[in-house]
Amino acid sequence: MTHIKDSDCRVSPVTLMCEECGVDHSSACPECGGRGFHKDRCSQVPNWAPLQAVVTPEQMNDFMFMGVVPISGIIRYKHCDTRRYLNIGPLSLRTYRFLSLTGQYVLISRDEALQHVFA
Ligand SMILES: [Zn+2]
Ligand SMILES: [Zn+2]
Image 1 (cartoon, rainbow, N blue to C red):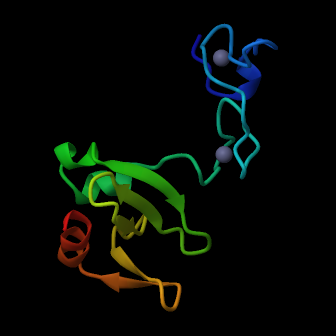
Image 2 (image 1 turned 90 degrees about the vertical axis):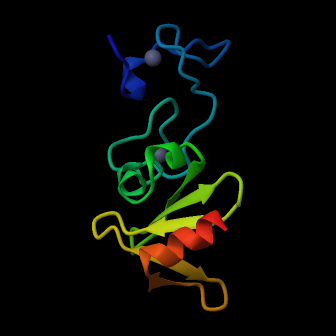
């Protein structure tokens, strides 16, 4: 049986890992409190679909999921090499640039966003 939520697991009090699936339960998610697994609709669950729609499968491997921006729902991905961000609207698949001066995300073209993140 595949474990998909914390209550499926038999956590060892010694290792804090599930004795059946091996998932680590030693720390809790700051948002949903889940230990081995996030609870439903936790925004910390990596959502790779928007990135998949914007970059090639090879490029996918170079990105880290950095979470979801509150309210706007924009998803932030960070490129491992350039350390730059690709910010994508989850449904619109529009791309945004973060302006540190104002703390806002502004719409930019996909070409601009890709140039920025791979620069
Ligand atoms: Zn388990
Ligand atoms: Zn969570």
